[in-house]
Each structure stands twice: as C-alpha cells, then as structure tokens.
Length: 160
Ligand code: FES
Ligand code: FES
Image 1 (tube, rainbow, N blue to C red):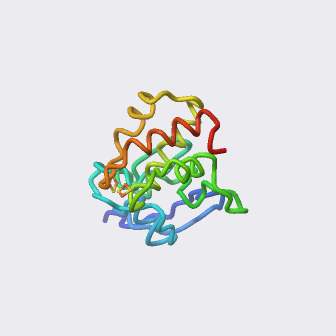
Image 2: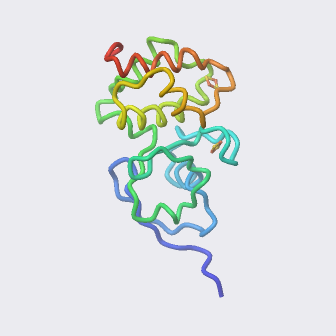
C-alpha cells in the first residue's frame, strides 16, 4: 500500500520544523497552510508567476513547483525570514520602498526573494542582470521599471 504521508524535517527561517505532511502537498501550501507563513503568495499554482518564490538552500525556487517532502532536510527562507528579529527592512526592501517598487504588493514577496538571491550571487547587478534574474516573476500591476531600479539601487548601496 503506498505511503500517503511522510514526516519531514525542514529548517524554516532558522527554526527546525518536524511534521507529518501528505506526500502530495506542495511546499507553498506547507508554508502557508501548515506554518501560517502567508507572506509567500500563490498567484498561479503552475510555476508561471513567481509569487511563491522562496529560498531553498539559498536558491530562489518557486514553491508551487516543489513538494514539501522534497524539502526534507533543506533550509528554507521565506519573506518572513528576510528581516532579522528587529524587523528592520533589508537594504533591498528599503530600496523597494524608496523607488516605489510595489503597487498592490501581490508579487512583491516573490520579487524580493528572487532579487535577494541575485544580490547574494551578484552584489552589483546591471539592469540587464536584474531583468534576467526576475524574468520568472510577473507583476500584474506592471511596475517593472521601478522594481528593476530598486534592485540596481540596492546593489549600488543607495537606499541603505
Ligand atoms: S504560484 Fe508559484 S509560480 Fe505562480
Ligand atoms: S505590485 Fe501588484 S502585482 Fe506587482
């Protein structure tokens, strides 16, 4: 008889979580519905929009494209884990604020997670670097230019 659930151990935002999950549960639903980390959004559920982007072992990953069981043993960071205990904005979040990089905000957590991963591997990205890194993130408000400007500014150190 096939196993329908499995116990997984995941480091989420620095805390170890051990939990039984259905084998078919997506990581995004585990984060939102089981751990109440609702800052990770669901826009499409099909890997198209990037709203659900989180970091898995440091890489930006669309959490609707991964089963929770596939994250067993991994380290996951969500938008809630970007700030420290003091809740101070990161330089990138500050740059989004200063450059008006959000409108309705629905895409913003995914944008921030993808852009943070970019800045970690390329601290001074060009406009083109940012456009390539964010090509999997869709903004339905189409505020792309300000988003790109914010990420470039964060790399240049303005908005810090
Ligand atoms: S909800 Fe995951 S890519 Fe759209
Ligand atoms: S700010 Fe509304 S979807 Fe991007």
